[in-house]
Amino acid sequence: MATFTVFSRTRPGDTVAAAEGRVVFVREAFSWLALLFTPLVLLYHRLWMVFAAYVAVSLLMAVALSVAGAPAASVEVVMIGFSLLIAFDLPALRARKLARGGYVEEGVVIAPKRDLAEQRFFAAWTPRRPAPPEALAPRPAPRAETAGLAAVSSVIGTFPGH
Image (cartoon, rainbow, N blue to C red; front, side):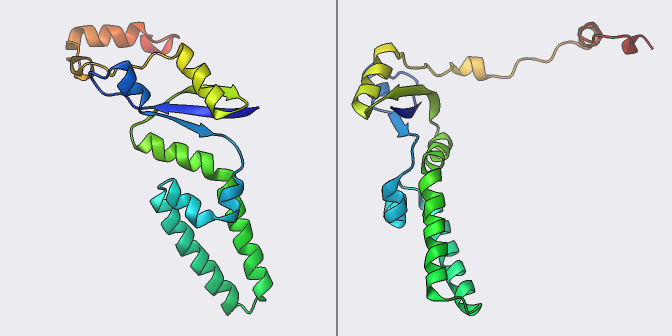
């Protein structure tokens, strides 16, 4: 069985069909493709900053190991280890990218294949509606005389009576 984390991004006035178009399933598993073709997988998933960091760190590690006089085999082992790290962490990297892009985690689905995970998810899913603008507006501050009473009455213990 595979585990999929589901992310969605809704906009005000979205229909259910439009909201379904902005749902992403991220499989929580080791990525063999990321191990074998790390730069290509990072580019495929549009992880630009991770790709830039991968290239920079790879170059720095290769230069540092060659300056240190390490044999070529050790440079390759270190690079394979770095690709292994990316292969294990790829789902988390994708989830962080989606969260920065405004996607919200909707839940987790366990299914043998992605098609079945999509069916299970959409069978029970109702898109979140964004909060109306008036709900996001700041509330007025309470008056001074009631603010002091609220602060005193919400404290449990004996120290407010000093």
